[in-house]
Amino acid sequence: MLSKYVTPKDIEDIKNTSTFEQLLEVALRILGRMPNGSIGVCDPISTKSIPPKEKEANHIPEPYVRVCRKLMAEGYPIFDESIYYKKIEELKSKFFIANPGKEVCDDIVKKFFKPLLLTGKIKTLLILPNWELMYFLYWEESFATSNNIETITLPINWETTDNLGKVIKLPLPPTEKDTDAGNLRVA
Image (cartoon, rainbow, N blue to C red):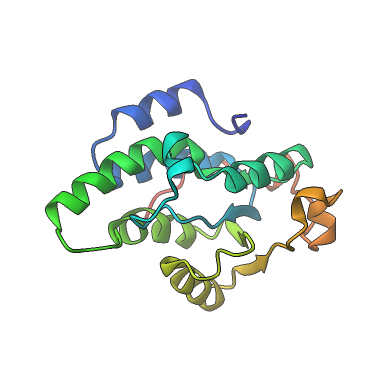
């Protein structure tokens, strides 16, 4: 399920990127179409330790996909990272080959996620239960706190919760008038 903010050209451009910086440009274009107050979902993409089940499914952790779909169906503007996973895995593999011995690809944060969060469009980061020990989660929570981005850990029973957004006290979904015109750029 693609977000309504993603176009076929975006998908093609993602496939054609060869650096995190190029991937960021596409992501900024998509985020520029989204309303202020959009929501991000934290995941373990930065590490080498993705479970085998997710590796077989193009590296997209199933709980991540399910929470994005659930909240999109409720009308929330989710910055869905799943469209970037295949390319991120490709770039991550190159990083690990160039940096033997490293367990975490910090370029994902430095060159992709940090600039996205610095736009100010994403106002809430959701954390799936039992993912509290992810390496970059510490960074994300610290960064979020210092940049006025709310973090919410989902309840264990999030999948069976009706009106999840309301239950976890997300603000009402923004309207189209809350969307900035034009594309975002990294300062």
